[in-house]
Image (cartoon, rainbow, N blue to C red):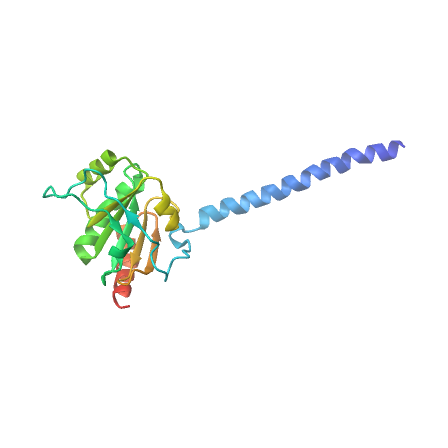
Length: 196
């Protein structure tokens, strides 16, 4: 009788240790995957498919250098025979601040049309951001509720898509575009989309 009661606590401890050990192994694997992974290589189910139906109103009060209102845009604007770059950004996004000069250079060096989608931002903050850092966008749409970002499969700010002249997504870049990524990935992807 005593022998049986002494064995029960040992079994009870091992019943607790195994789930804890399994949890620790899974947590370690998850942490390793997060650190080892390159977020710019996250797959996109949209590559090769038409850009999601998009209809974005302009940012209230946003004007260009001549004082003309900057328009919003629709997915039809991305299928006009020219390659386009679509950039999701926000004024509160620190990597967006770091990326912005590269977007300005992208427009200047390639001549490609760059469309901006302002994510969950206040119009005044978005206007201040573009006033301070420059506006490389031919049009800027407002994604106030984040619905457009969901439809495009956006993981976080910033993200950039290259859309071919027929309106199909040809390339996706997750995270800020650096000067190195501009030369090694973005410009070659634009040139490849132009040849389609």
